[in-house]
Picture: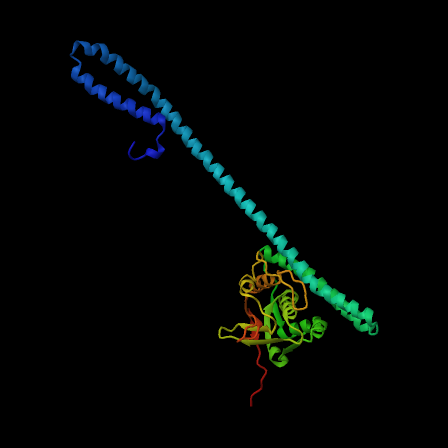
Length: 333
């Protein structure tokens, strides 16, 4: 017992072992010397005392055994409850992060149409001529903000492990909406926004249309505008890769990103926000939102960027991988 179970031995068990050992020694000793006259005087009292100790230790050991067994049971209950509380706390933290994510999404994405509306109002005050065009533009922006609110509801379903409603969406239709939304900002920075209309018309992508336009494309194009120089360019292209997935490329010739921002671009916890070439503010939440949505569609996003050097021009290129279809409308003889 001493050799094999040292870590489980209690002081009471040690005392019991000593008594058993003394009793064993005394048994042989008394047997050998019992015919001696003095052996009767000390042999029987010692044997009686040892047997009494042994008789008292047996129930004590029994009680100690069940005490330790109950202690182990209670300790297990405490550990189970502690783990349960830890999981509950983890779930609460996750729920809090989800709410923060939804709040960040709404506040980030709604700032773009609000800034466009503010620009339109300022332009209308300076030259209040085309009332119908102004009203139509404000109406479009109001509709866009309504769609953003609906999009937050979609995000909440993502966080609750519910499937996001995905359907086929025309790629050219989505790009046309983006071009209309950012028309004034393109003009204000003299940015050339180019794409092959006929080529993009061949692609259908599997996305949620509202979040794809209002969060994915809007965030990418808004950032491209922000970091483009006056007179810069933004190009959009698409192709079907060898695995059958659709690659959507959005590239600008802006100032590019430093390495530390590019590597942490999709991390909510990292500080990646910076001002644009015309001192436009940013939040740093756009890219993480993009990645989260692309994953919800079953796709992904990658970014390449290069700052200006003596040998290379600056650029930023977003590559979106999406499920979808490509319809080649070219007629052959």
